[in-house]
Amino acid sequence: MQVVLIPSGKSFSCKSGETILAAAKRQAINLASACENGTCGACKSEVVAGVVDHDDRASALTRTDLALGKALLCCAYARSDLTIKATQIAQRNDQPAATVPARVVRLQRLSPSVSGLTLRFPPGLSPAFRPGQFVGIEWEGRLRSFSIANAPRADGTIDLHIGRVQNGQFTGHVFEALTEGEILRLAGPFGDFGIADDQRPMLFVAGGTGMAPIVGMLQALAPAAPRQPIRLYWGCRNAREFYASNQVDEVAPAFADFRCVQVVSDDDPQWRGRSGFVHDIVRSDVPDLCQFDVYACGNPLLVRAMEDVAIEGGVPPARFFADSFNLVPPPAVDAQVLNKGATA
Ligand SMILES: Cc1cc2nc3c(=O)[nH]c(=O)nc-3n(C[C@H](O)[C@H](O)[C@H](O)COP(=O)(O)OP(=O)(O)OC[C@H]3O[C@@H](n4cnc5c(N)ncnc54)[C@H](O)[C@@H]3O)c2cc1C
Ligand code: FES
Image (cartoon, rainbow, N blue to C red; front, top):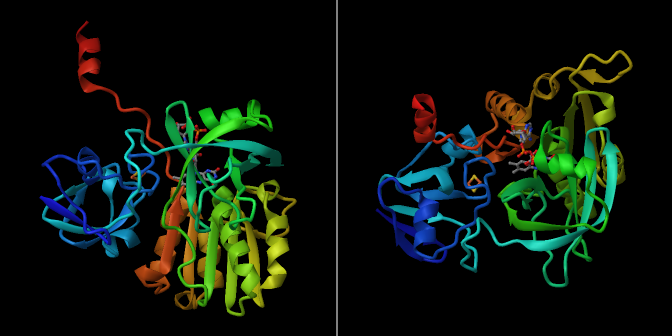
């Protein structure tokens, strides 16, 4: 099968059983990618013509993506000749993605379960990103994805909001050992999450650290003092986890018609605000959902539930945008090794 990339017009062939990303790499065409296992969405591209199949790793693909003809090139296979709109990276590199060093210039405990990092890059190496995109931090041979939690700044620094994961290697390091001054290695920016149309009403839905890219998008919108309705629904397990409330308070006065609703999902007798699942609260609060562009970010269950609410509410696929913090699957177990173990 033959694949043509737009806008570059470059083409390459795909063998049977070979992912589109692997086929491009084999022919020295470097396409955007990070995890290479279907979880991060860095390789998400639009199939303009032709048919692809995915294997069962494609967790970063939503129903909306499928309806819009999107594919994850790291786990998609050509079933016909294809034309694909894909992000091409300038240099060829055998690593999953080229990385640059970044110094931790600020480390803050934002809540019991979230740390804030500010990273500074060497001159000329700061990532040029769109608010909403994410970077990959290389740790023990694998890229960990984290959304950039600010709008672009003159000094090129970026903020990350790192939620602690139980037994997480990198997030454990951030909470137990990381100090200001440490150098991390980053790849990216990646992803297509971000403001699609800055003139339309927007409804943002975040779960936990799903607020990170939304803070960046709100900061980017604020200088234009938007007049259209902007709604933010933020769900956390308990009240102590609303770690970025001050950042929301800072931008809120710039918006003429802004409402932020915080929702707690655990039983918390001290909590005087809204309780339940954040997507259920959106469903009951916003009957006219279809007037909004909907942006959802956070754990995959929330993103999927919010996608259902958006579809029920009449939001067309082209107006639903999501970044799902998918789990990285455990390393594949080699069936032959397992079988040998069983017979030894
Ligand atoms: C596009 C994208 C953007 C993301 N942005 C952010 C962000 O801005 N802030 C943020 O805090 N997180 C974000 N994440 C999630 C983040 O990438 C993971 O939490 C991180 O990779 C965990 O790394 P680790 O080395 O600590 O865990 P690992 O050592 O890789 O994993 C340890 C164990 O935890 C499980 N695990 C891994 N990730 C998660 C998770 N998110 N939730 C629950 N269990 C998990 C693994 O399956 C494994 O069993 C994002 C994920 C994606 C795909
Ligand atoms: S590189 Fe394909 S989903 Fe991460």
